[in-house]
Amino acid sequence: MSESSGASSLLAHVPDAVLVVTREGLIQEATGGCAAVLGWPAEELQGQSLEVLLPEHARRAHGALIDGFFARASRREMSESRGIQARHRDGQLLSVDVRLAPHGDCVVAVVRDVGRRVRAEAQVAETNETLRETNLELRRVGAERNRALGV
Image (cartoon, rainbow, N blue to C red; front, side, top):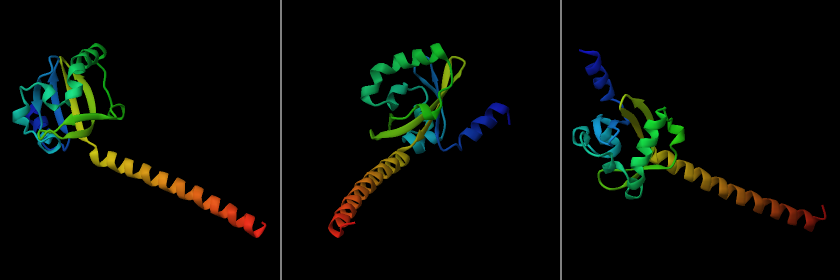
């Protein structure tokens, strides 16, 4: 087994979608994780424009983003990609984190579905707000009780 085919074999088992995209925005390679994350079999993505994975509102600006990435040609960590959405094959928008790394005239993009995390963070924020409101109410009731008791 060659080093290249060994790497491809390993990448086939990565749960995230891994895409190699050209400067022109064409998907040169895709891994098996694309089916699980984006609903697309890897073979069907190869040769397509990256725009098939972008929400409508993001398509117009994407060319400039690719140009800017290649002008700076540096890694972008997932922590820098909050709020990004990808379009699943069924048309549903997914919350994703994306990690980018230059690779010659291409960019390697690792796409991770973070929908569960985003929903959990929203639930935690809602719970925290409920607790804050409850705490304020308990303080108000405690203050009223102390006034009534003359404490």
